[in-house]
Length: 395
Image 1 (cartoon, rainbow, N blue to C red):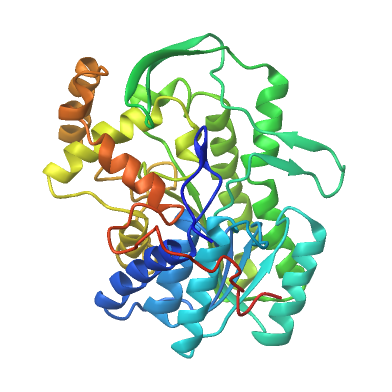
Image 2: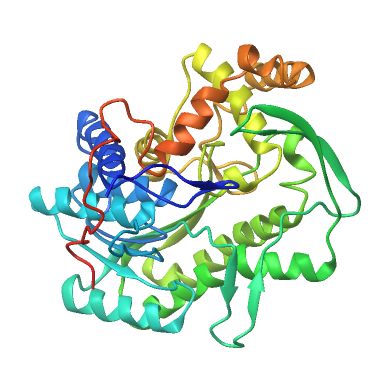
């Protein structure tokens, strides 16, 4: 079939297998170009098919020659209908990993469920014995609690008052004001249930109970703080409460791992174009300005460069550097004072008319469509493409 991008709001509902493969191959080649990483040998990535989770799986496999198991919830293809991009990403990753002689298997299902946890446990027992590291990188908007059966839905709302600020429709380039009404206490509780640390801790407890975590085991989850510009709707909003819970959970998990010399970390990563961030008002405009400034200063990083630096300059040092709250900060370049000051100045100038010259909206749009395998110059999108692609190691 001929596959073209079709968007619905902040989501692209089609994806291109050849474009997704190119994206994955570019990331693999980046890691291979950087040389070997002294990292873990058996890695479980929960949320392994896109964004930071995919970059973590690639960095582990092709940097440290790790055996990897990936867990995700992606839509498979059907005749005449494309799979979700994460499906095609994983198919490309596994094909190349297997060609390189690397162990790579995947489980497609609800990572919040007891059933997927049990399936993963059995696969580890059968194939790997123990896991050295777990990457927790889920970005789901909903969670059905495996004990209560209650379906929780996260919200993106400010706390205590209406939030009003600029945003951009990155499809049209229109800069306009947006207002978001404040949350209820129930909104906070639901968002914590979906995006907090409970499920991360459940995964660790389930595997530890089965003696599947090695001595010196590490686990890491990803978070974001961001600038004052986005603070009211992000870090001091409902999502911020969930991130606070996630970060506190790292200490609880670390306490539970003392007998195996294990440790849990939260890494605060930089703002990037992801399916999740595209849904957050204000963030697309902020990223458009941020990218312009960071590219001009020569310090722009994508997912794969961020995770490579996390592995080589933070996570596997004898002493892992953290901030006063115990978090790894790989957002250090984004949060540099000179960069934030310049972005804040540009924010005041940002309008529909000025954004093309003061921001990098085209770069934002390209990266958004790259997530789904589109906007690659090397690919002829007018040609027929086989949409029925299998994941070689799917269980």
